[in-house]
Image (cartoon, rainbow, N blue to C red):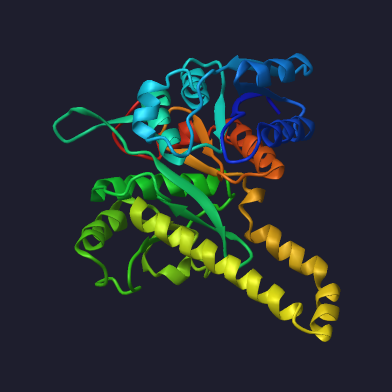
Length: 340
């Protein structure tokens, strides 16, 4: 296993920096070939790095908060942890970047500094591709379904959807180990004729250009296990993701309420306690650590704002794994007309 250096945003997310620092320690303990570039205020990262052989400090005096306008913050807070970490990836000072900070700021900074791949359009002009956010959702087949886009691009063209599908398939193969992903286009029905004007425009393009494309799928197929990859615009994907997460939280809440409502329920709860913890862990995003922003010339992983030690650990390890798996190069190879 080769050495990999991952930049980690120490002040990203809603929790105290100590949560992130503990997560870094956990990641270092789990991966002997991992090095970390801890990015944040000097009084936090310098003492932390001084006490660890495989940690280097990158001082970032500015912090982009969840309340900041993402674009404005990236433009004006150029010494923030998010911006400096993205620049470190661009300059080769880090192989990848993990942060639980603002998704909007992460997307903006990564697009500006890590930079997306470019392609040649029909006129022979170079144009940047649109990055998309992907992650896995647990499904009923005891596996995971890859969802793209989860919120990076609310408004896109049909050609963008084709690239999302191509990149998500590569992600499914490299990260999830799915040899031949089955790809669905999120719509309001599984029939080929269903959908909005936009999805009807996307359907033939995806059929002709995305290997493994099966056809339209419905919202229930995010968890059915009948599809390995579900593709949609970022507006629909973000709503679908949050609706699915909300349903999972409701299920766990109602199950807990029923078990605690009677003596027999409490006894039953004790008997299945280990199983319930397993279900909760599977539905939690902590095990995956975060979502990957695909389409860039570097690995960028975005964690949940309300992150945990386990999530920071797994997000950092996920970034390292993507680097070792040559995800970026394989993504570029999966798309047509890419300029290297």
